[in-house]
Image (cartoon, rainbow, N blue to C red):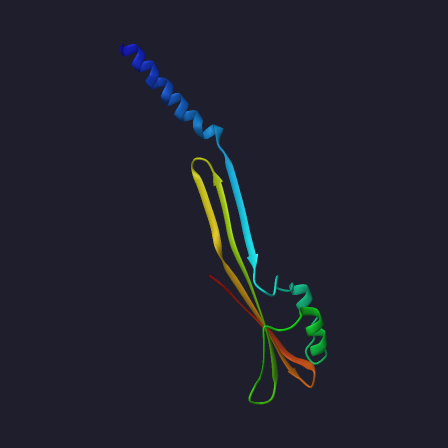
Length: 127
């Protein structure tokens, strides 16, 4: 009886030690973009030349802004807001679990005088 229990115990130890070798891999990628879609690439933004690029070019390239306002000095400001929410999960059974989630926000600002871009900048944040 003792020998049977001993063999059973050894069998369980061997089985438990082989379990990590069986393994499994699970990957989930859930990325969602805000109303404006994906933010423009740096390559697109590099085409903008202050004093030369027109408001019409920006509107044609980026679409309608999220907000539009006028400063006290009379300068028109176009604001484009972009967001990307991600929830990426990687599981390698039974020991490794990685969850990468958060939200990236990007806002582009364009100052316009007489129909021409005079200044622009980008602000980013991660949560």
